[in-house]
Image (cartoon, rainbow, N blue to C red; front, side, top):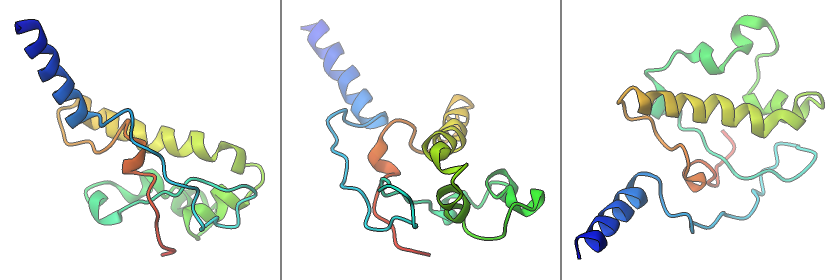
Length: 122
């Protein structure tokens, strides 16, 4: 009985912190940002990130690579496009993981559906 209770508690903690592994992905976004292939919908809430230094994500403000939205280069530049998923996962997820390891509220790290939701064009 104790083993069952321990498993149930661990499963509950898992589901509350990580999310269900059975969570379904949504269909590809209708907003393609002029991408060569459909991309998963994604959202980024600036209001949830006001404590962060803008230059961490907006490198284009300091390296003169552009002054448009992220997707303008990361989707439309044919050299950068193949790296889109890798770049965004590395930047976003690694920051969230680092915060959680530091004991802070780090946001989603493994529940894809927390970031891959429909968005509207800003």
